[in-house]
Structure formats: structure tokens, C-alpha cells
Image (tube, rainbow, N blue to C red; front, side, top):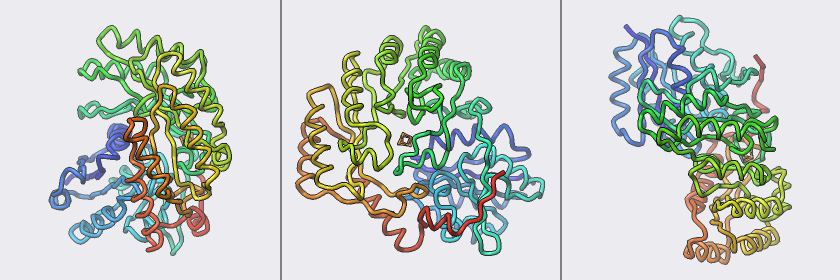
Length: 437
Ligand code: SF4
């Protein structure tokens, strides 16, 4: 009888699931691996039960985001009724941010904390050889206490393919993981730690592979694409980015490939935009739009949330990008709990000041994400006057975004927190015993 690993993910986790699969599949021994995208495959529970009956041991991995936690809980409950020998493992930013709630309220046996590739491969190999599977990099409950074994060594992106190409599954290439900024509302630093990079050789190799498969538009995943190759992930790597773009140009453009850099699904910090780098980008990339994360037009808010850049940096970045012919999408977040009328006034003035440039505003609502210092705060929802102003901008084609849907997500998280499904950052720290390994 074979061992089985079932990975359950949603459309929103498609890229991270591919990246995880690319990391684990070459390393695990004696496993059949099955994938289920729960939001496109309604019968996934029945199919997994059927698979489970044929397996010697079965590990069921679930990667999910906070708003999906009740779906994860219900799936675990149902599957457990039919598969009493299954081991349920959770991963991703929610489980990493709130391992306590994930283990005690959602029914999982184990949480993979932070990066999954190496930890999950070790868990699976330990299960198949009947060894202790609560390996370094996991969290679990022991004697009524949360134990976190925090892995010190970071994943080297070059040790793994960026997608499981052997399954014909592709996604934008992750060129950078982690961030040194640790903005208080964002999970990136708290989940992945400090920045590191995929090498130019590796990026070129997999870009070439994508182009050879007919996937001509090469995009990248990075918390701050213009920080690529730099010591802190923020100040541009003056040699690294030209080296990367020139190499990609030589590798893929002559075969019909196109480079999309600094745009979806990555973005750039305003203080990473510089004349020299943008000039180089203009020479090599095919996108005519760059996304920059500004987040607020209030310097007071930027300081509080720990952005470490100013509104003036954002104005300069927009001007530089426009000068080289790039339109700019400006990310803004409304609803920080401490955002007052003066801050909103500053953001409106910022919008007014820069709307004469070639910009669009990408609007978001603050969401109190588990694992961040703001996990137990509540958003301040916009009043009707601000909603009318936003609606006008949207109507004029100057703004877009899922800010309205994110308000509902924030409300759902507040409700789940009050019902005890989510623990705050402080609760998790208080309840846990953490070991480094
Ligand atoms: S700079 Fe961006 S990725 Fe880094 S912590 Fe801040 S919001 Fe997150």
C-alpha cells in the first residue's frame, strides 16, 4: 500500500501551493501526491475519502487564508469522520500567524510554521518511516501547551524550482522572499523573515523553460521587486537589477518572451524607485505600468505603521516613473484603527496632488491579519462622505480595488476573533513555548 499526501488549496493560494509542491515533490519518498482546489472541485471530500481508503498512511495538507478558516475546519471535521488514520497539517500565513487557534479550534494535528518546503518534506518522510513527525519548523499541542519549533535556517530559493514544471504547472517566478520592513499590518516579515533572492542564473533558466512551453509573458513574485539583490531588500540593487534584466532580455526576448517587472503580482516600495533603475527597466521590460505601495497620504500613519518612507518619497517616485513613461498604480489602505480626520484629509490632499500625473489609485481596507502586531485591532470604517469621494474617483476611472470586499473580510475576522476561532499575536506568544532549531 502506498503513502498519500493530499494538498488542499484555493484559487487564492494557487501560486503558493505550486511553490510548495515544487519544493516537496522531489524530496519525498514513497508518496503519491494528490491536489484538490476546493473552490473549483465541490466533490473533493468524497474523492479524498476514496483515496484515503487505498493508502497505508495519509497526510492531508491544507493551505488557507484567514477568511477561509471555517471551510478548513468543516473539511477537517468531515474527513476525520471517514479517515481516522489521517494526519491533518495546516500551513500558510493564517496557520503561521495563529497556530494556537489552528490546532485547538480548527482540528489540525500539526502546523507548518513559516516556509513550508523543507519542513513539510521532512514531516512526510518522517510519517512514511514511522518516525517523530513533529519536526523542526512545526507547531503542535503537547500537554495542553502550544509548542513551536521555529526553524532558524531560511529556505534557499535556488534549491527549489519555482514551480512543479514536471506536472505542467507554472506560475510567476518567485525572485525574492521575506522583507526587512516589518510593516505592522503585513504578514510577510512575520511569516518569511528577512529577504533573500533567487539567483539570476536560476531565474533565467526557469524563464527560458516557460518561454519554451509557450508561456511568453514572464512575471515575478517579490514583496519589493526593486529591492531585488540588495542587502536590505529596500534600497535598489544597482548592479543586481540591471544584471537580471539584461540577462533575461538576452535569454528570453529573442524567443518571443516578454518581461513584466514591478507590476502584478509584485510591486515596489516608493523609496526603492530611483532614476537609474527606472531607466534600466524602461530599456528591458514590456509593462507600461508599475505598482507602488504607498499605503497612506499621512506621514503620521506611515510612521505609525512602520513604513519607513514618507509621502514625499511617494510623490517623487510617481514623478520618476511617469518621466520614463510608466503609468503608476498607487496602493492605498484606508481604515487603520488610529486613522483620524486629519489623516484622511492628508490622504485626500495626496490624491489631489498626484492625480494630475498618470496614476490610478488601488484602494484597500485595513484587515487585522493574524501573526501581525495589529492582529487584535479593529478597522475604522469609512464614513459616508469618504465613501462618496471614493465612489467618484472610481467613477472617473482613477481608482479601483476590492476595498469594499475587504471591509467584509475585516468584519468576518472580527467576528471569528470574538467567537474564539482566532487568537491574537499576544495570546499566541503568551500560550506558547518556542524553541529554535
Ligand atoms: S514593505 Fe511591503 S512586504 Fe514588506 S512588510 Fe511592508 S507591506 Fe509587507
